[in-house]
Image (cartoon, rainbow, N blue to C red):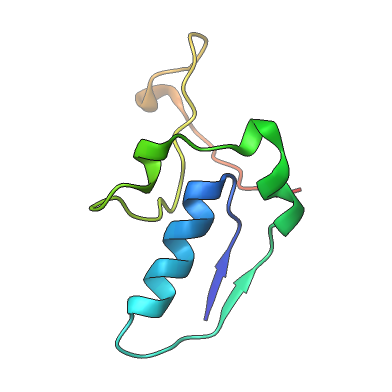
Length: 80
């Protein structure tokens, strides 16, 4: 079984495409609302739909205040 939470339109496209290209079908639960695709902040650039790109299991968080990986002791996954 696959449970996914897509955060932008390109991720939603790639997860649906990968589901259809599988040689066998596994049940897939998409927990992100489809209304998310209409939000301006969830838009994707056209290049994000290019061939060769895939669904990213974890999107990296980038920013100036980020700690180096060696200093991170706990990672929390949350949704909502």
